Length: 197
Image: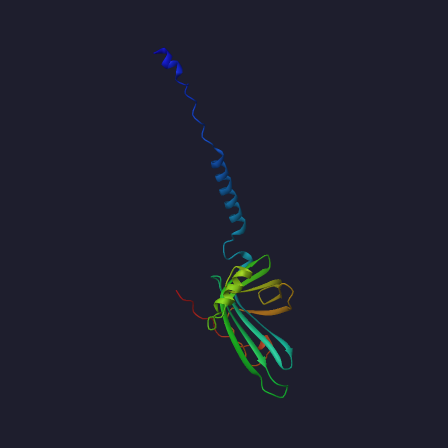
């Protein structure tokens, strides 16, 4: 009996539970929360409140061509932009006017405006959407502008990465594009529309 008992190997102590996976998991979660806190900003920020309303302007290319725009930066983060094009054969001819409208979303951070838009009446085909997704990670058109100055009446900004400078006026009332080139100060505006409940 003693010989049998002596031949049984002694019990080994149980393995201690490994704690490093838990520690690594908690550390990754904390890093994720910290990154989210740095990247996420509640809309609207104090900077973005300056942009609420309509911004509109015009650029004369020469005596036969011009372009105009009117953008509504809404308080819910949505965006509506109207683009106008003016063309005539020569200075003696009447202006021909055409326009398109795009809708989307907008944000501003550190003076950089980021607009994501699409033309609902002329949606892009799947190939164009795929190209946009590969380039920007979004299927909508991406517009970037750097604001150089802004106040309650006007804004100056630069198209990125190296586009021209633009000047726009501000209005709280909706703005309609004129059918022929006019200084923005003479553009028609309409009474504010009632907000939906």
